[in-house]
Image (cartoon, rainbow, N blue to C red; front, side, top):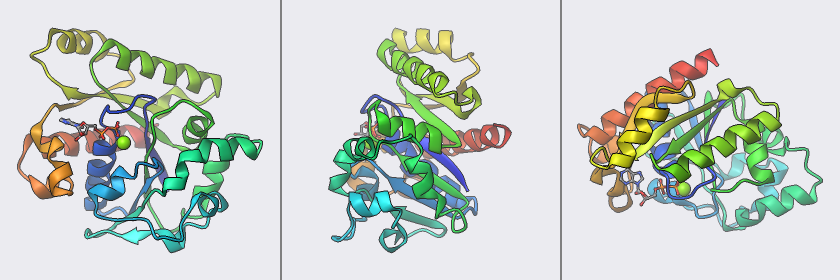
Length: 246
Ligand SMILES: Nc1ncnc2c1ncn2[C@@H]1O[C@H](COP(=O)(O)OP(=O)(O)O)[C@@H](O)[C@H]1O
Ligand SMILES: [Mg+2]
């Protein structure tokens, strides 16, 4: 089972949109896929019209008691583990366990025979939970809006990964919400795009992605022939190709 974390320390960069659309592409490619939402805001579940069961909570999650709380989606090969509101204190709970940073890895190990790919929709922070994510993931995909602050937060992730002695090959970034009419976007893409860790796929700023909040479906379902669908499909292909090599 490959674990792919969609992670950034910044909020609002397109993590959830990416997790939702890539999990759909992954499942469509025939791989048994679990989208696991660890952001207590629960947006991934919202997009797939799935609420957590009322008896789910952080304690059960930390125990690795996941199977009873995994829900099927409307799509073949795709299941979802919705986040629970109590996940907002996951950091504290991990800290309280005198965490070694490998708790998430242990929690997900129990799923390895049931799924080919586990995609994590992560909350925006840089804490012990992030260390857990970095250690548990085989691949870390970071959406980067072409702005200086977004670049800075990716640089901080690379620094953290180095500190944790995690292979840089695991990390990949792509430009998200790209608007080429903005000089800053074009300049930053020209400067950082050629770097090894950046994928060549980009996701432009597109109304169809924003409208996912209305239709509550991956763009490939609500707007199958759109640029948004093509962009996420290309992104998925590139992530998978690189992941196999990593
Ligand atoms: N490529 C895009 N084009 C237009 N809007 C986008 C795009 N990606 C995300 N959004 C919108 O931006 C907001 C933040 O995206 P989201 O995926 O929730 O970010 P995060 O999970 O990083 O906080 C949402 O309203 C979402 O619909
Ligand atoms: Mg999100």
